[in-house]
Image (cartoon, rainbow, N blue to C red):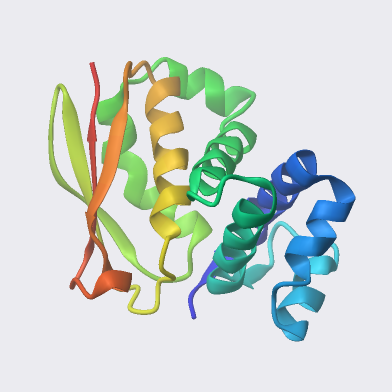
Length: 185
């Protein structure tokens, strides 16, 4: 399974604890395998790599335990992660750019957080764009909810209004690539 950088995992853990408290966090951890639970209960190191499938399973469990079970909690965790990543000087810089700038540079950001896959611009115009992800054959099902939340928030920070994102193609559902499509006003 592919891995995600610890800095992202750390923000997911913070978000889950803010939603479910320490008890909710422990209940979500208990749904994982013993090995996954031990790995994610240790202090999360920002530069360490963590199994992305385990992280998505944890978010899905939390969504059922103290969300609505509709994967909205995964999207919110992605938004929270974007807020954590894109703060300070990064937030100021991105706020002076545009959604087009963000979409053009998404591939570089992807490489900082995932040890597999390539993200490239599929198309774009002044009201939207799409990102195509390849090279991540074991990406976990439902990853898109978390990733759409992150990307939509980055577009909002860069000045996009009324962001709408969807994921019509997915490697985890049998497609040869993932496609993330976005429109904005």
